[in-house]
Image 1 (cartoon, rainbow, N blue to C red):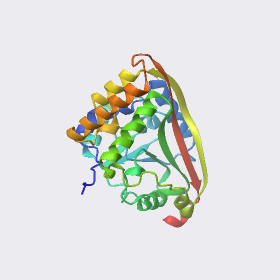
Image 2 (tube, rainbow, N blue to C red):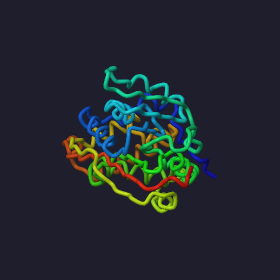
Image 3 (cartoon, one colour):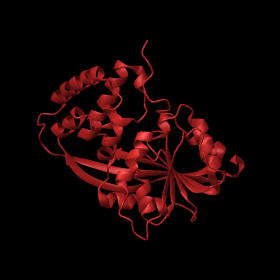
Image 4 (cartoon, helix red, strand yellow):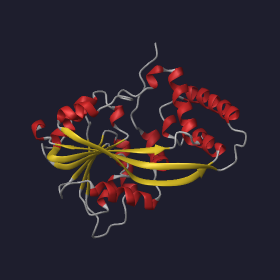
Length: 272
């Protein structure tokens, strides 16, 4: 019987996270500005799973106060390294360690709650959404961020192959809440207006060999939870897959990327 996988972000991850998830400076600024445009008032913003602050700092840079928490002390320890140069227009970023299933803040405290690449890790996603609705103001907005990569690109094709091979080797590689639609439950909690926007879009290039090197160096978040033995098997499979799919592994191939915002508004007043 295979053991459940540990999806915690520990000291193995903290130093790689910023490299893996970093946005170009102009893109990061655009994301922060787009998020602030969605927030109804001047109340503080909460980020669930603040990580190293790559999103929170961009919102704070617009002058808004942000409260962020994370379960991982290793991620929180890394966040100060990402602190921007202080200026009078930068809002505060207040940090704490907490579990997203039990948000340690009062009812109706935040005009917006942000969450990026976190909800799929919840062991009880309904509890997390109930807590989220509770701390939102009645007219607040839940902002779910996600990094989109063209699935037909070399990046997308190799990422998909890694995921499929990992699950073939160990079905417990699937995060607890992956693939579960949460829209219906949000509607039950009061979220009646759901929209999705592109906060930023940009293009780069990437070769097959560059992408394989990222995996080999374990810079990619897809590899962080693999044991050495499992990673060796997956990487060997990936090399064979790439050899069959592409002829020229050094050619720069186009790569389109986006940062998406899924916005849920409504009346959260009954959840306090």
